[in-house]
Image (cartoon, rainbow, N blue to C red; front, side, top):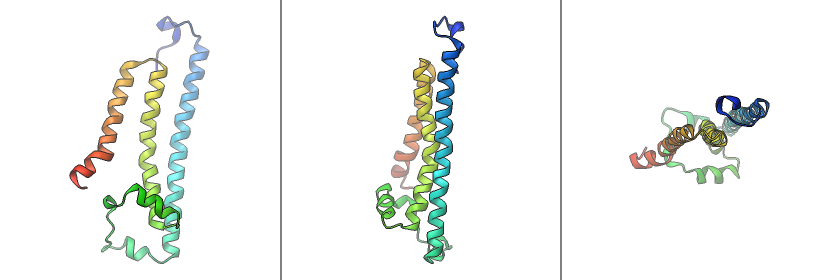
Length: 143
């Protein structure tokens, strides 16, 4: 959080600054809450469909041929139209991973709004590192 406006010589009032901060905090909190809840809903729905269709032994067994590194997000999306249980579970996991990434992106926006350029830079570096770890390294290392 940035120092109080008076401490920085900012003409805005403390009430205005804290209301803006509270709004961003509410947005970040809602994004985290709804991201996790949506993720859980998809994972549970996928598990229920998997159990209802009798495919749990094939997918969850010790000899499962499932390798999530070979399943693209496009394949997950196309599987959702047919209510494919595995696609629903994978979408839930994608959402679970995306939730903290969204938090970092919102942090960049929050620091930029506060004109705290040092933290914009630091948070942007964290965001780029996350993007490399999620999108570049798995394909480069064939994970």
